[in-house]
Length: 169
Image (cartoon, rainbow, N blue to C red; front, side, top):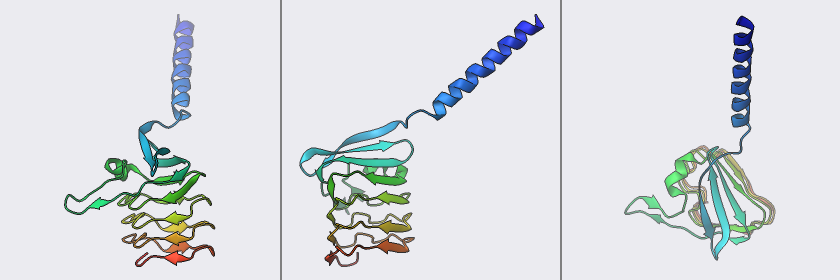
């Protein structure tokens, strides 16, 4: 009887271990997703429970605004901006829209692909967690106030392809 209990206990422990291992290796869960392209559905965004916001597709990202009266942004992920810790923009995206990541205060990492040609006004406004950004070769312009209120930002690598840097960038 003791051997049977011991075997059952071992099987239970094995089952728990396997369940925990499966949960640990599971894909990240999607918090929210939608379209964010200038031409409608040409670009999509997905926010995962890991804090990663992924922009995918081809073409230009839509430009957004900040409503000063109501103190709210118009990006589709604005309600979840405090969850965002990293942004990955995939190849195929050609621009980063105005106010795209404004007030993503926990954002610490941004991956911008070489195909991006421009970064619009206030794209990273108020991203106080950013410490460094590398803008890849191929980007020719960044708009005004792109990195305004990024208080911890100490390093921005600018490519030789840059021809225009906006005021207060």
